[in-house]
Length: 221
Ligand code: DX5
Ligand code: ZN
Image 1 (cartoon, rainbow, N blue to C red):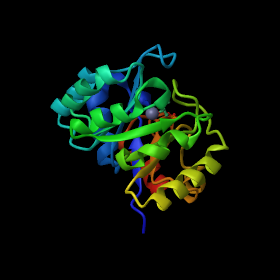
Image 2 (cartoon, rainbow, N blue to C red; image 1 turned 90 degrees about the horizontal axis):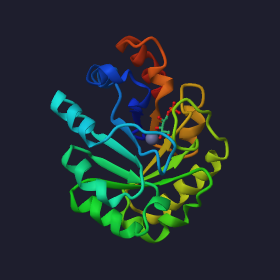
Image 3 (cartoon, helix red, strand yellow; image 1 turned 45 degrees about the horizontal axis):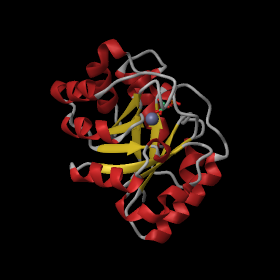
Image 4 (cartoon, rainbow, N blue to C red; image 1 turned 60 degrees about the vertical axis):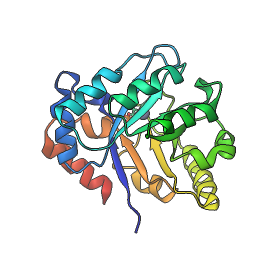
């Protein structure tokens, strides 16, 4: 039986009460915190940085923090996130001129490393670095904003990525990010994903732990 991870994206949480929001989502049964970093350069939006990551650790968050970097350049900010308490650091291969070096840099800090593929980006970027990758993250929306709808062609791409991972024999998570919720998580899981980001599906309800639990339970079942 597969070990599925639900990763609430705090992009959709109440930013003025972030510590409490993360506590509520985690005690509602989520596995990890998905932390979206946008720089108004690689993507047209601006969000949160290492200070906020460290703030969550200082607040007492013990779950893994999955830092999704939508920034360019990548290398300059990796150490700051590692020191701020990131567990996973993923980046877009288009945003870094030396993908192999960036993966090595992330791992040199003891973090798990991952590559993120935009909807139109082929999986080829992963081919020669599979031994250095702990996560393959497929974007099922164009990065930059929460609340967009799932792009259906991601399902075929997930099957392709699942095949690539299984054939490699490496222990690599297959994460999906964007437009994932109760209504479509079953087909996303059947296509091979084992790590599910959900922002608006979890947080765009009246913001109580009970509502988060209801959504997370439904997604898991
Ligand atoms: C989009 C972000 C996602 C986003 C997902 O660029 O990477 O993590 O928050 O939000 P939903 O689940 O609302 O599509
Ligand atoms: Zn994300």
